[in-house]
Image (cartoon, rainbow, N blue to C red; front, top):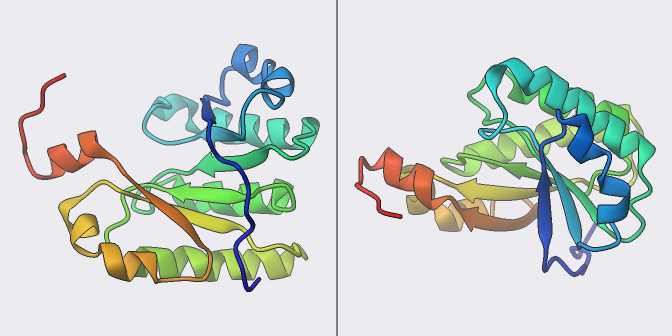
Length: 176
């Protein structure tokens, strides 16, 4: 892919896919938002991580997303869940997945790793369109490496800042 696809992304709706009641609302939700994002990261309790991944895969298989984007925010690369998140999701619904949101990116090495893993999985599963990467900068090191992260891969979709985790990484006091 030489140019990133242009798609409206005004409203991204985060779905906790381990909750069947909320997952059941997704078919109606796709008509109202630009992106549905299956959240697997910090908002999901540890004992529900595998259920969230399985719920996201089920949601991806059963829902017609049409022109609505399908994203997932996987667990951080240094977690015990990240590798299984990528391998299982891409293997099951990679052809429908548009973007993987990667939290707690510290440097271009995190993007390089995910880029190579995605390339291997896309080849294995014969996925024709590349899955893009959206980096979340939530550490001081990530912010310091912003330029290198932005140019780390042609898969780079975009970047977001995570102010709460960034403040925590700097031991900063925050207010609501």
